[in-house]
Length: 241
Image (cartoon, rainbow, N blue to C red; front, side):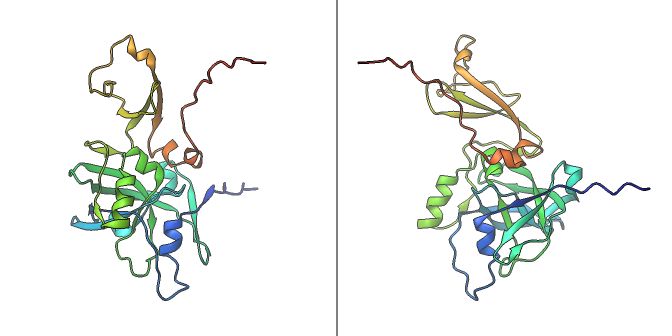
């Protein structure tokens, strides 16, 4: 007797941004989302100016199919299938992924993985949604874009660093024990302090380092959406009468 094929795992994801832009119940959609402008390399080799949606919810990266290169089944990239919550119920399963090639405001190249949004979204020809984990990995300045979209308009993608990014990069998150500062450094980079001076061997003991992998694993898993704050030791308590 032939064994039944293994059922692929699928994850249900919610994004307030996606929920709003796919809401076709009302003729006129009114929503305010945080966006940034960028240039995307399309499948035809042409560069397209696109306004990408920045989503701090625990969703996943999504992009229109004509924006993605090297499209494969999600299993080939080591990911699960997903469903997105919509106003009309859960979406069909997202079974394919591809690479989104775009640039930040300093023209640094960024390559990240996105699920294929193969169903058109009414009124949005070039759809890109970047989730919180990727925003953190590329160090996007979300507060800047949120404020600008609310009061001024959409600006080119601004990041807290000026360097290329690829989803296969390994990133170290470094907490300075005497402050709330978090440094994001590549595995090959040298740890530096706030004054950009090389940290001495004696001072390295003052750093707490956690190494993570980006989109290929932890950045795009459900657990990565949980709080990752560095644990702190409470000061010794003194009993008083």
